[in-house]
Image (cartoon, rainbow, N blue to C red; front, top):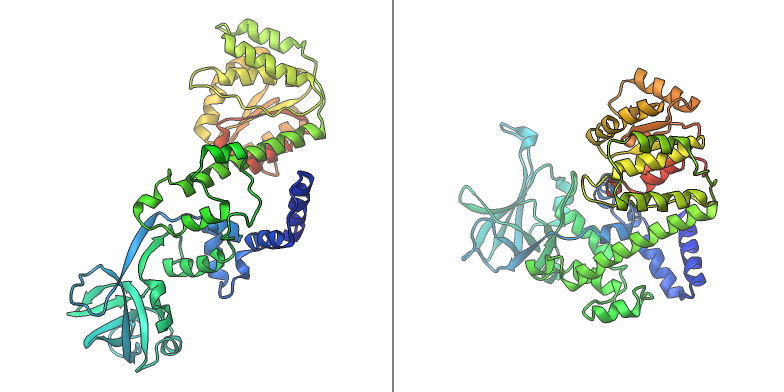
Length: 445
């Protein structure tokens, strides 16, 4: 689906809820959702790194939060400096020394010699492009340099400065600056340059976008600002204390994330119920036989949960439930007994676990019960041999396998159920919403 189409649908949904967005507000949304590839100077290598680090859109990068704070000290000379200081200074460029000749040849760095208030220093660039560096730092011109100080053969130097620019950029590179987690092929300098462009799209006024938090929630948290100011505050920490999770801006944005997650789950539930599903007969022989062979009695909570699930089975919509309990409280047996209703009505069941160890534990637990009931249960993981997988695929398509336990391998395209009717996702927080939907969509409502 194209981006413009997604935004149009989102705006339509807001209108249905009584929220009418002005033209300027719609433009703000489009700016926040535009792809990072729209930023001038973002090439394929940087774009791939940014997408791997955060995502494809402006909004994704805005939620890539800083984890540290560095202070760039403005200096006029190197009198009180020590190795490792992150500083910003004005330097007069004297000459460029291009790599070449001697032992090492092209592996030698490009050095730019400069003077800082009568003290010699050098800027070092490995694999630097000579013509570009000469244009950036013309000889006899004064430029602004920012980076970490080093000492080499008794002379101050900065290797790969974080910034080299005109005198107008001096104020931008002094004081406190955030630092971010990185990935391969990405530097703080490049990330900051891209973020500078992205942050310009964030609305600074509190009422630039409609507030989606309820009035009571805002009363409970009077220090919380609007979404735009909170994002800007997130990216402009003054000290390490501003990085703590209980700062107002981080609390506000964390709440937004939880709220959005709950709304997404409600939409999934609404979608499942709207598309409908076949009701099932609850008087099943398998369930009664299973209860008879269990070596223990069910607890009151287990009985209550199974009753709730069976009520959903009677309805003509798809069930979407969260089963929560401590380790050892009997969630697996509840899931198994519930799946028997689906199996006795001619459906198959799938149990997806986040790791192969957990999947095998489920198999060990359920296999004896399945054998006693005449139910075929099997295991599918990514590490299985191709020949084993092909046997499982065939048996699954034929309906011979009634319960399939596995890992992420269950959501692969090759896995085709004859009639999937019951899905269990163990530790669902370890899976994304899209992964869970891919498994449930292998069934017919």
